[in-house]
Length: 243
Image (cartoon, rainbow, N blue to C red):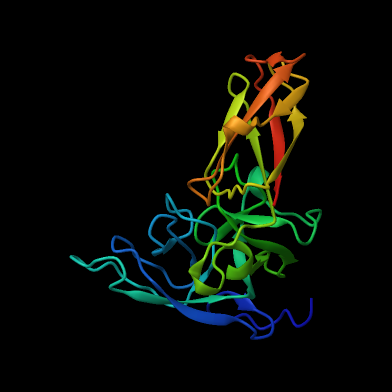
């Protein structure tokens, strides 16, 4: 990582290779300067990252765009910046990045200024890639619309690798928020803790996969023991989606 000095007002660091472009803003939303932003899956309008129905983070807002009474979707446009390393507040407890976290690990948005190490069972949006720490403890996050959100023409880009952690309830866990599922996605799961009557296999049957972008794509993980549903399993497990 070359030249990671010289922090800007947006929390950007390093060489000025960032791209900027305007995105129409959701009518019922205030966008905050320096905050991470996403687009709504249903409308494509800009909202703060972690807003219900939003996709992964696509960049950082360059200015505050205040809610205006009586406006319609797209009446306002906000200039966002992307393709750069930004500093964000580290999560706490089990969401905190540490020196032991591998560089290149995914980051997930706790709010529009804070990041964590996992998606909290698929409830947090992916926002970038972990690039280590600043001296003040801030997390360096590489954010790129091309990697986590939009590509040319406004189409949704599917992250090649998505990861998270969840806990079974009666041997079942449904994950939908913040994930993209394609027709060729490969899904893997590995137990972290064993609780209840834990099974010996974790499956995502074809009938429990819904292809789609964040907010539409869904996976239902199920625990099995000797081929039968393990309905008393309350174990925690890590999951990984490739493709």
